[in-house]
Length: 349
Image (cartoon, rainbow, N blue to C red; front, side):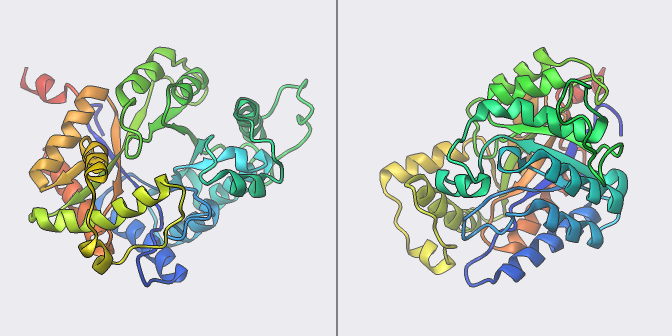
């Protein structure tokens, strides 16, 4: 692909719809990966979450093994593994195993958030010490298990098997300037979680580019932004498919861990004024609406951020509409209606 190409990827949460089993939800994630591959998407990532009844992607490496077996060309990876929840050696072995099975298709995206509440994070880490200041050392150790460590590191004699010498494509994920600066300093690719934290996107990507230093991993910056997409020709369908997720998000913000919301409950739910304002603010910079509106929203974000690509996070309640989101974005891309920032201007000169 040329430098003017907007790169398209998919982020999936292995959503469990109302009435579904965990088995059905996980199979739905695999089905979406197969669908994304047929449409020509470059990457399919799954995210790590814990203790959330509507999300079944708690073990990214396990799910990615199944996704890898069902696909053949699309890159597969984590968006992301929450590194503080794990011993770095375990992640090196897991993704070393994925590399041994699926070769150069494997991405290792890493985050520092817990992906859950504090109590569950403590259960995962087996400690009541949740110190984000440990993240740089954990990250350094993880990379070292793949590439080798300096002799003064007390872990330098340990090898990840599989893993050592078989380096995945590293990505750092985040929703803050901190993660952007760390990614830039390390010289790795960066993915910003615009799909749930849209206030600081432009600032974070500018920080990433300003702090970027060429490395053994990359010579130039490379950034993706997550964009939530819900689309249909009928605005009423967009509203209906968005409602269950919005209700769940509102309940999570109040400290609950909600079960999946049925379509019937969503249709009957009456949002109060505060909730409506919250939803409007949350969706303003996401790609909700008709195909034309989706194109306008994505192009505006790419123009304002200078991102190399977008990672589509389908936000509809039902699988067929999540697949439809991938269809619409892929069609817009094929028609040349989604472009890198500045590409359209340079093409006309």
